[in-house]
Every structure is written in structure tokens, then in C-alpha cells.
Image 1 (tube, rainbow, N blue to C red):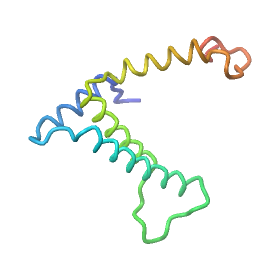
Image 2 (cartoon, one colour):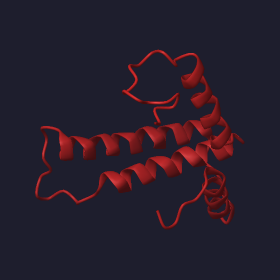
Image 3 (tube, rainbow, N blue to C red):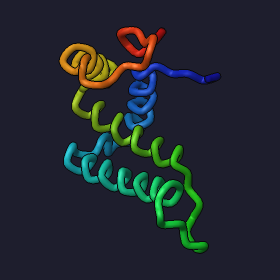
Length: 117
């Protein structure tokens, strides 16, 4: 990928954007509502592309990528407002999967500890 950014960079970029407005971040509850709304929009797009419900010809064309971007933005806003590092949260989750759940799934032949060769 040409323009790779770390999670820290993404969180800083979103914070710089939000910081330019007097209103700042919405409350955590309001952001949960927004996250739920964006997840619904993502679900709708997934259903249109992969499910049994094609779009009406009058519906605006969106993409799964666009909706994932919206979900990510709101998730970053929520994390920033609660002073949570998503990189640290990710590391904790991966540690959990690599320890507690290490034998939960069937590994591919020749796969290493993390599914690599």
C-alpha cells in the first residue's frame, strides 16, 4: 500500500480534525449511537453486495470500503474521547488470541504460530 499509516497516526489525524471545532468529540453514548448507525449502513452494503437484497435503482451507490471507513472514523473518535490507544487495545486482543485461544482453530499445514510458514 502506498499510503500506510499506523493506528497512532490515524488517531492523531482524527484528533487534529476534531480539535478544530469548538464542539469537540460527541459524548461516548452519542458516539455509540453513531457507531451503531454506521454499522447498520455497513451491514446494508454487505447485504447488497453479498446477500439476497439488491439495491433499488433509486438508492445511492456506496461501497463497503466507504462504509468501513465511516465505522473506523467513529471508532477512532470514541477511542480518542476515552483516551484509549487502539494500538494497545489491538495488542491486548492479539495476545489473548495467541495465548488463550491458540488451540481453538485448526491451523493450516506448514503454518507457524501465527499462521505463517
